[in-house]
Structure formats: C-alpha cells, structure tokens
Length: 294
Image (cartoon, rainbow, N blue to C red; front, side):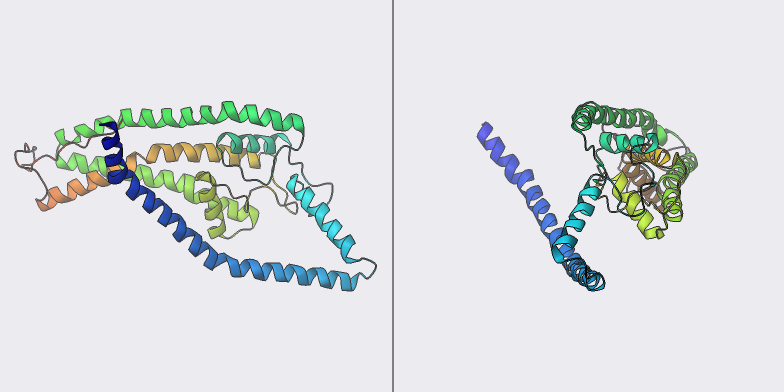
C-alpha cells in the first residue's frame, strides 16, 4: 500500500534525519548566540558612545543631523559605495569588479556588499542568474561525472600487485595534497598579505567563499586605502571557479581513497578479507571491489 510505504519511509529514514537536522540547527543557534551576542552588544554600546563624543566635539551638530548623516552613509554602503576615502576610490563596476560580481552571481555566493542599483541592472541580473546558475551546476556536474568515469579504473586496482596498489594510492594522496595546497592554502596566504588580514581571516574568507555561504564580512579588493592591481578581483573570480571545480573533483575521490587505504592496511595485517577472495601475485588475497556511485 502506498500509505504504508510512505509511513515506513517517514518513520525509517525521514523522521530521524529531520530530527537530526533540527537538532543541528538548534545547536548552531545556541552556540552562535553564546559567542556573538555579547560582542554585538559591546559594539553597539561603543558606537553609541562614539556618536556622543562626536556631538560633544562638534556642538554645531544636533542628534537629528548626525542621524541623517549616518543614514546617508548606510544608504551609500548598501549601494556598494565605500564611505571611507573620497571620490577617487576605485569603481565597484570596472571590468575586473564586474567580472568578480558575475562570478558570485552564477556560483550563488552573493556576498551582499555589492548589488545592481539601477532597474535595468536588476532585471538583467535576474535573467543572467536564471541562465548562469544552471550553467554553473551543469559544468560542475560534468566535471564530477568525468572524474567518476576516470575513477572507474580504480575498481581494477585489485587485479594488480599490492605494491602497485600502494604506489597508486600514494600518488593519488599526493595529487589531493598538492591540489589542496594550491586551492585552499596558498590563496588565503596571498589574500592575507594583500588585504592585511591574518591567515585565519584569509582561510575563513576562502572557506566561506568556496562553500558558497558568502557572508560578505570579508571581501577582497574593497579597501579604498589599498592600491590593487587591475586584474586582482578578476583573478579572485577565476580562483573561485577553480576552487568550486576542485571541490567537485575531490568530493567523490576522498571517500574512495580512504576506503582503499583501509583495505590496504587490513591486507598488510592479514585482516578483513572475505573468504574465497582470489590471492594476488604476492600471495595475499585481493580486496573486494569498491562500487563507484554513478
């Protein structure tokens, strides 16, 4: 009966996952509140004190005029204009910055520090995203599909001697390590140096970006006191695309490599092999095949 199957599916899989999901959200909300609420209250109080000191130093201004000026600053910030510096600040819509913005649209990062302010720009952004987001998903999916087709040869590793299997696993691990350094370690170091961040802040920006969370609290190329090269933000956009592609490559590869390492370790200990497995040329039984999901 369809009703019975639905109840069984809900009780057997969906309900536990739903409970775990809700509990995870509640846990995150509790910890974020404990960590951030007091700091927010402190920042709010410090800001109010600064406004009072400003009014004391400039008696020609009253509270209403100051609030109006703060409102102008907030509106400028929402429109992507950095209130620091002057009118000679680099444009947020030069080609490099526009290329960076286009990348954040199709990857759904959406930092929130910059958005189209004209009606024509907003309309174009909608249609651009409608086409660009599926294109980005198709591109990343095709990368993953191509990798899975290539990794299908790993299922035949058990046909080779154990030493050859070990060399292949070590080569794969080295490939993953070097790629991770190039995509996830070196770029945060560069961003930290250029932007004046700590490495922790640079790595935080890299993770928030490549996970497509995109809070917008850290964004490259937005400090008006710094002089960036003209292609800086374009290079950052290319790094984002390469980083997302790298994640699409390694996500199916990591569990497979871990499983293969466990199998080789068990073989070296003479454990974990099913009865009836054919021995390889070294005299040890061959590991069972690892199915690769399509």
